[in-house]
Length: 437
Image (cartoon, rainbow, N blue to C red; front, side):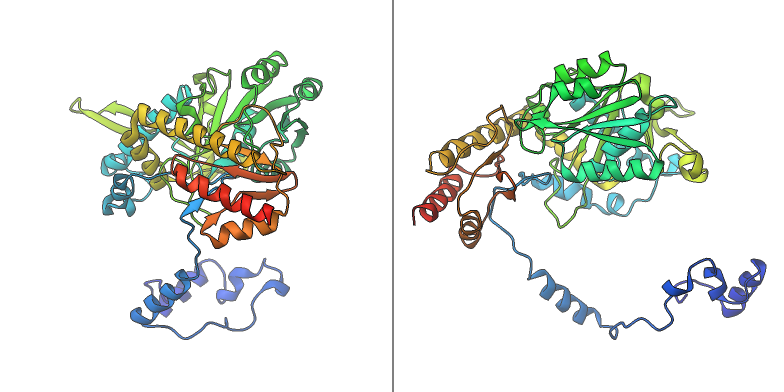
């Protein structure tokens, strides 16, 4: 209570007003066995200098790899200096939720610009102001697609495991059913999907490219889903949209994804950014908030919160979503990144990702014992077998290279525009040396 600007007498007055004798009475609904009955075992306070020294010691334990050949949902892309600089400005870094539009025009404009760019990227009509991360976006999309008659969500087994887990948790919370569509040869089994598209299915989610790096036949999947009367949700890598068909072109009703590749550095768990966009038809089902452009009393351009469901704030038990905030600073970062690189820059980054991944794959598969597991088309990730896997990955780590992600099928490798040919050749030479020894 030391941070609350009130006197002991004022606190007692507030307690009496709510019918409580003391502060413990405020927690009477909490089971006694989970209440803390002793002081917290906290260390003594530190001076600012001591705290700075301690934080530096902790930060020194981090291992920063000059070369990163691992993706699996978090990607090492080049971030232009301006993308780090602009969101660090005080007026953006400390901004709060823009409830008062007249006091928040700068923040609202930044969100509006972000929404516009997400719509251009996905081909959709409207975007919300972002959600927490890509997995949350997928789960929210599944929830917005359900209605009274259709309560079943289908999701491809080739989606990211974290996305599968988050959608499963959402379905558990609402009492809805989640069914996993099996995969075949690293991609969604289209015949299995055909059989599973029964009348109670509300939507189907597929990731493009999928967790194994494979490019799905997104248009064929979308046509099949619509034929069954369900909605089609596509999870997208935003960098890949620089050269791949948009979700709208593939027939998607909702496009979602993880925005971390758009200017956000790798971190231990984030912060990340979930983007969501949909067609005009589904606009009012979109969770969160939507910023719009209008004119003020003088006829000048102004920005407002055009659409947000009040139930998400004050009648949560009746809401279709409990998302009532957004990742504004991360959304701003994504907008600055997209504005900085532009359409051609994004396409070039995507082309380099794809070219370097295919170069790395060819070199690795030229080593005896290393083979491509899934032979379909891929963007910038691929799975190979790898004999003596742990030994190879340890040798790469010792050389300052974070190798691919170990998995049951082998190793999931990734290359982005950031890695040079020399770095890729060096990694391949280390793999070859270990396996030849």
